Length: 243
View (cartoon, rainbow, N blue to C red):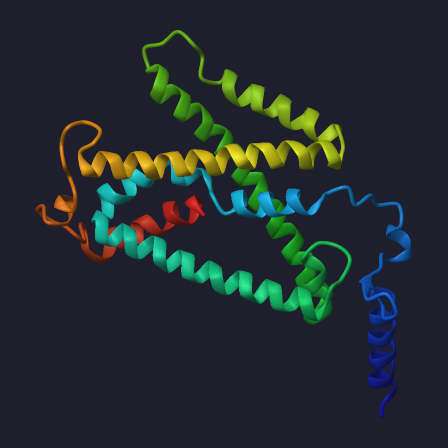
């Protein structure tokens, strides 16, 4: 065995010894991370995970997605992106079980591939949120503007400012306060989705509005795949945003 291989094996054994206490079967923190507080409870993480799968695009672009690609194209787009995300989550679950490293997911890139790959993952994740958060703040202004009307004297930029201030205070309050607020906000978000689904069924059935739509939109001109292949491709961006 070469010195390089021996060094790799020793490094791997050291990492495993640091990560897991076999006698108690629990993951340990690295020495430099002993000051971290694990104040998130299981109920916090479960609700954050559930609500985290519901993106802003579901509230903002579902109607335009159906209008662009038709009901069949929209259904296929949501199913395709959803299936892709199932594979992603399955892969994350497998690697988290195999390598329960302390730290964020970018640590897996350095452990499995190379430190350069981990560096790239970290910056890509930063860029992702640097673009996503402003987009979601803009979406909040668009939603409020839709409901109050464009002719209203209420400035729509006030809503993103309020959200930014709340985000700053929530993050300053500590992880336990963050987890508790996320828990209740997540319940509100899931409840809203359930109400939307119920209202949609009632509207389709004619119980609300007095018109029974049923599956009529699947038979109108251009349906169910409006715009053909290009209409379907166009909707993938907004569908991904919905997840």
